[in-house]
Length: 218
Image (cartoon, one colour):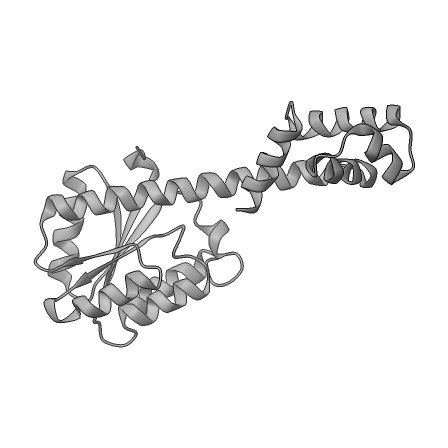
């Protein structure tokens, strides 16, 4: 389970009473929150923190989720959600829509397009907190996978061109003799490069290497 001290719940709602009630609820469950009275204010915060474009994902380095009202003056919650999707932020920062009864079909459609969940007002405190905790766990898992992928890509940069050639053929399942024939090098040289690849990639077998590369691409 995600530590409450490492996670943030963002609340975007134009109703001060709703924002205060949600912030109090989260404090009572030892969850940190940050509130915004408009989609524009939240969008500006993201831009200032480096979350406006390609650096968006790296700007969010801790688990988080977003409680987002569907209907607000100015930029709507749906418009903000579309912006987050365009920036690739909706996976690392799962969005839970807060909806009135009439907006349920709209929220359902948003879930189909990548929103994490929705909660209809008036909502059950326990049900909402359960959704939030699941969303934060999802965020933590996405961040962990991305950190692992970044580590693998860093390891790959440490390989020489020849080691990359050998690695590619090892992953394809070729034995050392065929690798040597394809690359026009000796079997002993293949063995040396293979051992260096395994050492640099911190694996012990071709299967483990293939799984590592596959997970980094997921």
